[in-house]
Length: 546
Image (cartoon, rainbow, N blue to C red; front, side, top):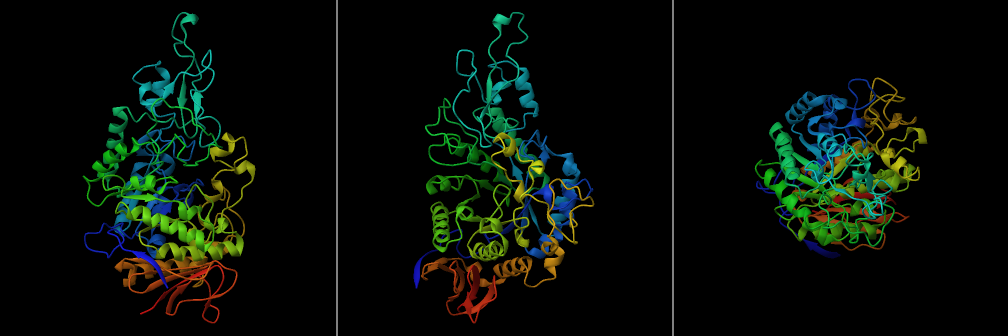
């Protein structure tokens, strides 16, 4: 019945020496969409503070705040103009201090979002670079290059932007405009931006860039932040000479070996410098956004002197199929085992469709999302829950005029972007804005028909997705089998999946179209009502055998 097992340092029995994040459940807060305290239709940090008791009741160990640093908001905070301040939209740095104190008082850790690959085009450094000429110290902090062609009218290479179009933008005026002679004026240069033009890439070969990042790290760590989620952790470093890519796709993250924009060897030196700073602050951590198809490449980011944790998105990418899910889990666990690291799981985030939508939408999608929640929460390692997943929320298709994601414009209105998974959280009430704000004019429109998906409604329903999450997280925390460590696959027929944790906790998933027999044992929790002891389709359950 058993089909292979392993026990490694990080996923073994919990000891006093294990870090707090070893088996943590963390909650991703998208601040714009969590709770609006000042009534402007946009979520803010005082709103997050007001909602902390929801996280306590959910049972999570902490929260990851999507970007709150000062920003013109061209990409909703991932274009940072001052990395050592909080944007007034979210309440300023005083609001952050209040939130941090409120969270720590409740025993919740606070992880910040760090965006090191690029800055905003409104950052003082970039504004100085635009004002200065070629070869200037100001421009050397970024990646400026002369264009190709007789007058430099073509981009320096063929790299595409993640958001569509070329990854290069030409400065709006010729260099050397202060020259008295037009003949002396050089063609305008281009600057690299792997994302939007408002997000120029930094030159990580410049010592000031790394020194400034270290200053930023210490600023927030000294203030009390418990760690950082590092955006585009596989980015930053660029290949020498910026050669053309052999194959140019749509521009979306394909994270393949031929994508020269990411996973360059020099990025590991940057992560070692980051880790050195974090090691000065015991109990702090980093978790990286890492897109890499090659498991060995992924694991390299988690070596003992680099990132503490790394998002492996194979479970996000896997369809609702037992074989595909098993493969994703196996590859992810094998990767972290190779470097003695801790696995990190998530089913959704601010960049992908919500799991209930990905798994089919409607009642079917919600049923499958509930089942996968039990799978993720039973796995060894760290689990991140995206806001609203605990309510079973689906993505919301918005009208064209409501779309704000820069992907929409950059793609020529062919890629709708990520707004659908960023709708404000419904708290209470029968109609929009469902307690999210005092104004119905929320930054993204909220749909009708969410009254039964509010926090208040689901709290009162023992069969709700919120109740399922609360119960599962409580069991994960209290059952000794999950603390004992160990992981072992069990052999089941095609379309079914089962694994054992510790001395006898088993998670079973049924992705077939018929009810199936489960292994013998006492059922702890199930994502759907059992049918005469059988596990129904699109469902999962935990049981114990001893």
